[in-house]
Length: 173
Image 1 (spheres, rainbow, N blue to C red):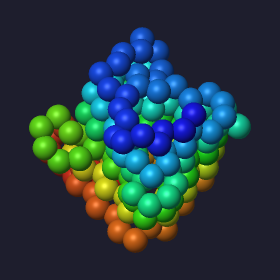
Image 2 (cartoon, rainbow, N blue to C red; image 1 turned 90 degrees about the vertical axis):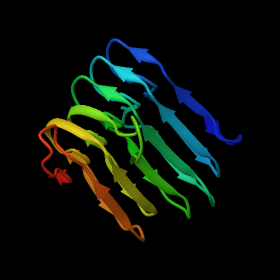
Image 3 (cartoon, rainbow, N blue to C red; image 1 turned 180 degrees about the vertical axis):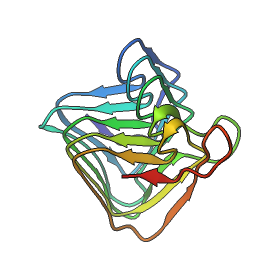
Image 4 (spheres, helix red, strand yellow; image 1 turned 45 degrees about the vertical axis):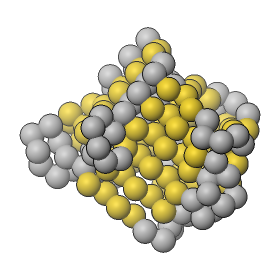
C-alpha cells in the first residue's frame, strides 16, 4: 500500500479490538512524499491510530516532505497513536513524524504509551520527531518502549507530554 496523493487521511474510524484507523499485518505501507493524517480514531484494545504486527510488516516514510501524523487517537490499552507488536517502522527522509500535536484534541490517549507503544520489532526514526500533548493514564505519555529495538537519530526531538494529574511524562523504557 502506498500513499502518494496530496494529504491522504484515515480519520474517525473505530475498531472494537486493535487498530482503530489502520491494522497492518503484512507487506509494506509506504508514505511517499506526502503527509498521511491518521486522526480521531478509536480502538477498544491497542493502537488507536495504527496497529503494526507481523514479522514481514513495514510502515515507512520516504522521500522529501513525507510525514506520518497521528493525532487525536485513543486506545483503551496501549499505543494511542501507534502500537507496534512486531514488524518494522522506518521514518526517514527530510520530513518528520508527529505523535500528537498542539491544539484542541491533538494529543493521543492510552493507558500506556499515549503517543506510541513499542512492544516488539524494530523502530528506526532518522528524521525530526515531535511528540506533544499525548496522555497516558499509567506510563509513557509520549512513548513507551517495552520490547524490540527503538533507534532515534533524527535532527531534533520535541516532546511535551503530561500525565492526567499534570505531571510530566516524556517517555519510559
